[in-house]
Image 1 (cartoon, rainbow, N blue to C red):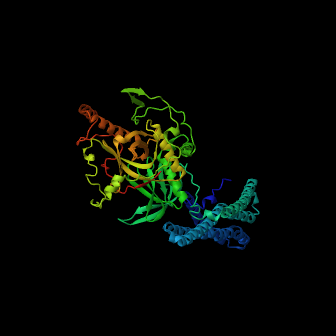
Image 2: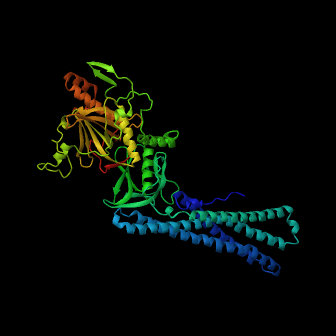
Image 3: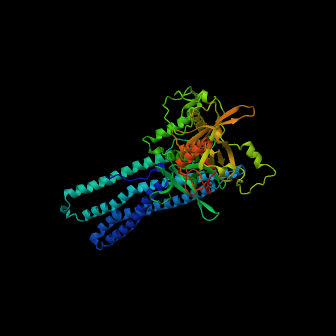
Length: 617
């Protein structure tokens, strides 16, 4: 006998679109079976009514007991039970959706804790009720797959036995093969009954086991204090709330089932057979955002910096795991031979920063175009090559050096912005005289970056100090669960590096290009870039600090722009050298250098609208 398809009871709690799609197949089968049963019963009643004379009285009685009665019982009992459970399941599902909608609209204000507790209990009760009704409904549909076989074969078997008894004198018409066939049909019916009983017991035990779960399974965000977060995910699936604009200022939130497939974010509404593409995740960025006073919202930004979709998770754990999974996918880890191992390795590499190390790993330095010192020293007007010696970590950064995760405005700019005689521009635009060198600069290049952190260093003689600072900053973010990072526009000119707020156009930080002594891009993660700044102190000495950023484009392009700016500073002292440099690099119509980058043409050096100021690591 062929195997019987069944609904998996373990999938009832998640209630995914795939399970709903399979459930619709069973419901369609139950509806078809109901129509067929009604037609079959009408045909049987006509056969029963055709027995008119006394000779057919015994046959009519036997047909009524063995053919018509079983099909009537099957219709009135089994099919009616399935229809009733379907209605109960629909009501429970609607009640759960309404409670989840109320829960999703909960604000983050502490004074609403009482309301939150009541709604959380309501969600848990609705989710348990839906789980119970779905389990009963699934069990009834699974049992129907067995009972329909019995219900279809029993009337035929009763009709055949009635005809045999009626035609006693014509028993020779029924050969031994017919007897064996009827016996096999009877054995099959009996085996189906045995399988049904065994399956019913198994489903009952499974139902009891699934219903004995802890209350935390039904309670959303039950482990908000210390959730167990898996940061190595390369695929993720679950329900999220999608923000849709319905008007100029009005929005709606729709609860949909999302899942990742390769480098794509897919969405599958209820009732859909398959999911559709929502967002390409390659090289994108994801950020936690505050949206309409809702909790656990995050935004996916496209590689060109344009704001994408905004989604809301139901718990802190789901929120952070979605962010980590999208970050891992955006790095195209899924294209490697063993993506799980690569994701674990990247996270372990970040965590290794808390373990004291005595030296760097033994690896050969590959020549990097971002190194401005070219591994050489100038001594007595002679170029002496550096020895290929990898310094120890303690020689680069003092142990226990604090890390700053936000950029503080320089003191001079702070005084300028708060000077009483200066008029504050309500639109946040910087006045032209604030940085007069911008208009006269031969080089102007804009990059979208996110500040990761900065820390004091002991030397600027090698780019290894930048790599060590990157390692410690990323490790500290991973260990302390620091995801937020500020997005800025990095303006590279031939005089300075400026960090500009994309919303207000206010300069957050300004570094003279002559004070930048080292700069480099990460050798593996091409989007990481850093530079060392030498700044004078009030005591008369100098301090060294390394700044680490994540860029939307390759870090080598930023390094190339910085290197070009430093070359311009050098050749400006020599008119002939400046002329040769201008001939070797293409210029724009206004005499500025043209650099190759992957920024979209519609940026025009200005921030795009709706670009978020906060980003996730």
